[in-house]
Length: 139
Figure 1 (cartoon, rainbow, N blue to C red):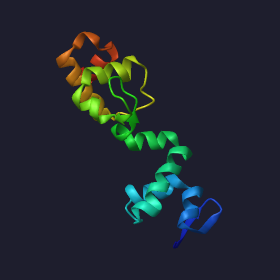
Figure 2: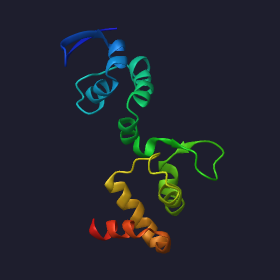
Figure 3: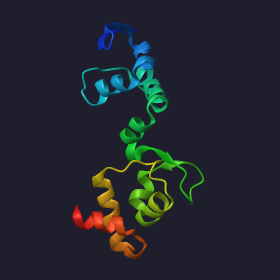
Figure 4: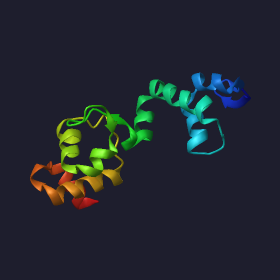
């Protein structure tokens, strides 16, 4: 694997890319996905990076994954991507996510919250929490 030199709090540091995955997985992930300053092999680097990222910074991982995180949703035999019930059963997803107090399991951006609340408001407005109705009206 190639070596990479990055500026750290202690000054410039040179490590093999695999070692950077352990040292600062969030920074490496941002370089690949957000900044696009680093290209890596999908199997050799990116898959292990995602595993390390989940353990190193759960909040960053949760926000990055959004609706692509797998969840245990009622009515399915195994875990599924959160976007499946979000798109196909918005009322059921809303009950599971908001009323089931599972907001910490699936991160919804403001845009996705708006989409969800808008669908639920059209389909079954009586189940919505007041704060979510207020969010819709003030979006």
